[in-house]
Image (cartoon, rainbow, N blue to C red; front, top):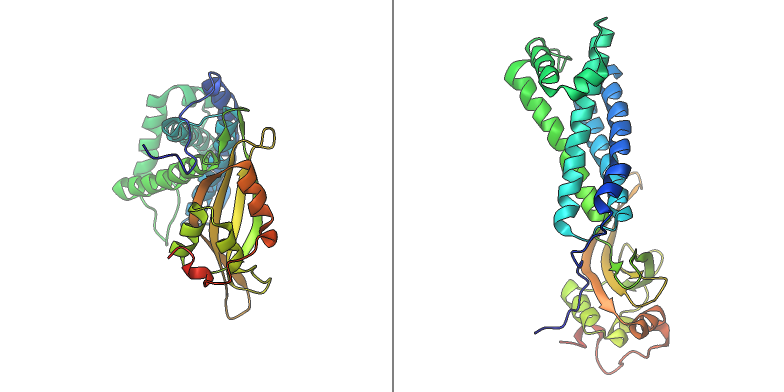
Amino acid sequence: MHATTHYRHSGAFSPLAFPTVLLAGLPAAMLLATIYAYAILYIPIAGYVTFILSVGFGLLSGVAFGYALRLGKVRNRTLGIALPLLLGLFAFYAHWAIWVHAFLQRADVDASLLALFFQPAVLWEIVARINETGAWELFHSTPTGIVLWLLWTVEALLIVVPCVFVAYVMISAPFCERCSKWCDEEEGVQTLRSTDDNTVKAHAEAKDFAALRALGTAGTDELHFLRLDVHRCASCDHTNTLSVQRISISKDDKGKESKSTDAVVTHLLLTRAELAKLRDLSSIEPQASEPAGDVLA
């Protein structure tokens, strides 16, 4: 049996996870759905702007649901996908009810928001009628029928997929089962000069801190370097992990910088002593007899 070297979620979750996630997630879903519904109704430019708003709605919903999952201490990957998916679909449905209500109000048609919200069949019938005549203009034409259905399908994907993805990423951080709390992140504990991924991964997973030290500290003006991030439980110092990110900075013709981040090592488990060594790499003597890149060759 191989020893566990990288952090993996236990699959557990708090007994209060469901009510906690729902109590925190549903109000957030309603608030964001209301803002989004009125934004796409009253912003006069459709097309690309609408799709940008859809992605924004999805991302913000994902952040809100991610916080709800963390509050509920969900470390189960299935629930980490299923719960934000359900909340995302609820938010999408809520935006439809609110949008249709505002759409009808703008046309001086009386309609009860509660009736629309709690009677899906009535809401569906109105949406189908709107589909026949169109709701907005796109490229000097008004989409109707199957074209509008396809656009609405794309809108749904642009909302729900980012929502689930962001929420899931937010609960990917290590969790200390001993203290029942999420670990704190410390970004950039060390920054090292760049080398190939296989070498870095081998050094890190072997806990060869002398080899990491031999890579040298990255200068502030370097455009390619390695960033060492740590997650640790501040209460017991029992759960500690190391992640190594490859950072690449590029500049366009106007000098504007953009940064890309690629994971090399993700949540490698460390003991308290190993974490202390990692923090103080400068005190570790590099192996001068061998090049840094060949220590584990």
